[in-house]
Image (cartoon, rainbow, N blue to C red; front, side, top):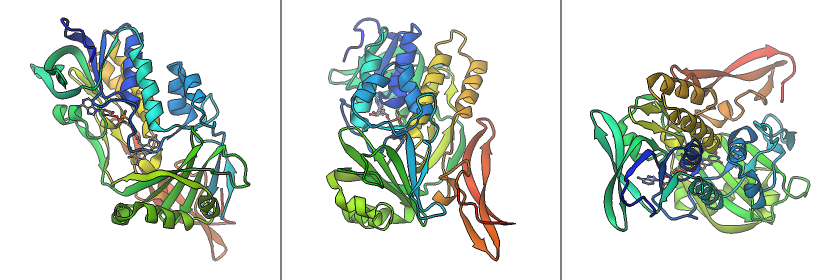
Length: 409
Ligand SMILES: Cc1cc2nc3c(=O)[nH]c(=O)nc-3n(C[C@H](O)[C@H](O)[C@H](O)COP(=O)(O)OP(=O)(O)OC[C@H]3O[C@@H](n4cnc5c(N)ncnc54)[C@H](O)[C@@H]3O)c2cc1C
C-alpha cells in the first residue's frame, strides 16, 4: 500500500480499481487532482464477466486513455463484423459491428489482463496513489456530507480525508449502501448468464474468428466473443428459471444448450474447452442517482445492466470519463452534478429487458417477423424512459399486424 504516510488527504478517493475506477482515477489525475485509488484484491485477478465491448464505448475510452495499442498488443482480434443466427432466419446473417465508433470495431479481452492494464495505467498517472490490496470499510461523514473513507489493509485501519469519494465498487457497492442514493428505476432479476472459453474456434465458413456471433433460440441467446490469447468466450443467457440447472451442472448444461443452436453446434463440438465454465445468478438491474454531497457513483454501482446486454463495461468506462471530468471541475456542485447525470444518461443503453426477443436489437434492426394470413407480424419496441436520466430502461414487445412480406432484417 502506497498511501502517503503523513498527509492523509486527497482531492478524490476512488473505491474499486477495475473498468470504472481505474478510468476515473486516471482522468482525475490528468486533471491535476491528488487521487487515492483503493482496490480490495490483488491484480491480475479474473472476475465473473464476459467482456465484449464496442468501438463507441470502452474502445473509445481506451483510446482516450492512450492504452488502446497496449490492449491490441494483447492480441484480441478486432471484431469488424457480426454473425447472427435465428433472428428471423436460420443465419448466418452478416452485419456491421454494434456501435462501431471511430475505431470501427468491437473487442473482447478477458478481464484479468484488461483490468490489470487499466489499473497500471491509472497508477502511473501523476497524482494517483494506489492502495492495493486495501478495502474501504466505511465512509466518513460530516454534516451530511461524505468527507473521506476508512481503509483497512495489512497494517490495520486508517482514515483518509477527501473532497469527493467515488464509488466504483461494483454492483454490491458499499458506497451505494452508505449514501443510499435515490433509485430511479429498478428491474427485477430476469436472466442468468453462463460462459466458458474454448480454443480452436473458427468462423461460420471455417475462417479465423473475426466477428462476434449472436444466436437466438427461443428465449435464450448464445454469444461468441473471439478474444485474446487464442480463446473465444462462448456464453448463454437464459431466463432466471434456468439458473438452478446451470448451477447444478454448468458444464453439461452449457454443452447441451450450445449444441441446440444449429449455427454454433458443429463448431462448438470441434473446439477445445479451456478451463471451467463460470456464470452468475440472476441479478436485478437499476439506475441510481449518481451524485450527492461529497460522493459520486460510477459503473455498476450507479447503473447495473443485466449481463445479456453486454453493455456494462461500455457504460462503466464512458460514465467514469464523464464523472471524472465533472468532479475535476472546481465548481462541482449541484447544477454540475445534474449536468453530469444527464450526460451519463444520454449514452446509457438498455438496462434490462423482459425477454431477449424484445431487446437484443434495441434499434429494431432485425425484427421478429412471421407470415400470418398474407401479412407480417412485426415486433415493435416501446421504450420505457426513466424521468431524470431520460434513459431507456426496458424495451417492451408489442405485436402488430401489417400487410406485406415479413421483414427479416
Ligand atoms: C456473467 C456476466 C457477464 C457479463 N458480460 C459482459 C460483457 O460481455 N460486456 C460488458 O460490457 N459487460 C459485461 N458484464 C458486466 C460487467 O462485468 C460490469 O458492468 C463491469 O464489470 C462493471 O465494472 P465496474 O468497474 O463498475 O465494477 P467491477 O468490475 O465490479 O469492479 C469493482 C471493483 O471494486 C472492488 N471493490 C469492491 N468493494 C470494495 C471496497 N470496499 N474497497 C476496495 N475495493 C472494493 C472490487 O474488488 C472490484 O475489483 C457482465 C457481467 C456478468 C456478471
